[in-house]
Each structure stands twice: as structure tokens, then as C-alpha cells.
Image (cartoon, rainbow, N blue to C red; front, side, top):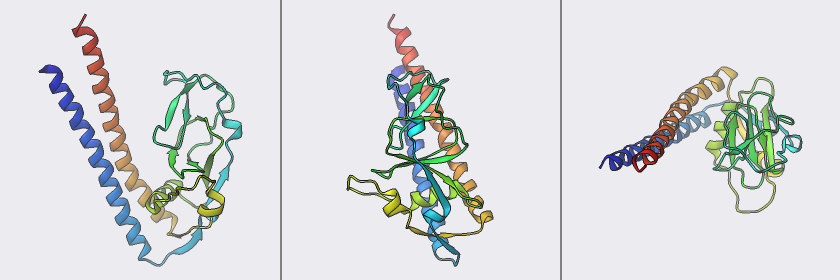
Amino acid sequence: TFLASLDKRIQTQNKIIEELKLLKNTLRYRLFTQLLNKKNERAQIKDVLSYEQPNQYLVKNIDYSSNSSLIPVLTANKAFILGYTDEFFGVYNKEECIILDDFTMDMKFVNFPFKVKSSAIKILTAKPHVNLKFIFEYLAFLNLSSNEHKRHYISEIEPVEIQLPSNVQQKHIANFLSIIDDKIKVEFEIHALLIKQKQYLLTNLFK
């Protein structure tokens, strides 16, 4: 009964996280739909983002560690952190960026040092007077996807035209959505602690 109660608490935590994700998606949709109804400067993605190939940041040894004090190895797909490496050379450490899988168009916003596994990743950074978090959320709003196994960024994403409000408005939208991101992160940390607690209890209850 005790373990069942803990399982129920973990399920509740999962529900909290999913509801927060849904809330963010709903608010993002409303914000950018409103943006499209206003008159703003228009720009193509290539005008607001620069890209870098990841070759110098590729991990050499894929026998990853679970030690989170090491350098995380990232993917733009659902897994995000594949593991950790003790390769402290060739680490991307240029503040915030977007990592984009050029084949699947999955992407992640990153603001910590990392290495990557795949050469299909493109590393995107903001050009002057552009808020990178705003552009990341805009791209998420556009919900870019493809079933074709090919590279998409240069041919299909860079030419996409978007509305670009003032830097103050960009920052306001980015900060508002970041507040929800921070809340989701806290709830994920609670979820991880609950899982860890259950594993500890299982180990000790059945000794």
C-alpha cells in the first residue's frame, strides 16, 4: 500500500508536468497568433539566425557516463541528453544557442556547455538585436516537420519569413514563456527525486 501511494504520487507529478506543457503550448499559440495580426517588420530566418556546423564539437567516445558533473552529450531529439563525457576538449561554450536536427527538424534551446553526437546537428545563434529565445519559440509555434530524409535548414527553414517585433517585445514574450519553462524544470526535478526515493526504498525494504 505504501509503494502504491508513492506510485500514485509519481503519476500525479507526471500529470502536473503534462498540464504545464499543454499550458505553455496554448499560451505560445495565442501569443504568436496575436503577433501575426499586427504589423511588424518582416524578416527571413537567415536574417535573424547564424548557423555553425558541429564538427569540432563531436564526441569521440560514445561510451557515456551517468556522472552529471561531466560534459553533457546532446541530441536535438526527445532524449536530449544522451549521457556525459570526460572529453573536456572541443566543448561548445558560447552561451545560449539552438541545436537543430537537420533531418527531423527537432530542436532544443541550450544555455550550458555541451558536446554532440551527430554531424546532422546545426548550431543556431542570434544575430544582433534578435532575442534567440523568442526565435526558438517562434520556430516551435511554426511546428516545422518533414517525412523526407534530407537536410532541411538551408533550403527550407532559412527562407521562412516571420514577423519581427521590436527587441523589447521579443524579450517580453521570451521572458514570459521562460517563466513556464522554469516551472516545468522544477516539476521535472521533483519527479526525478520521487523516482530516486522509490528506488532507494525498494533497495532497503527488501534487504
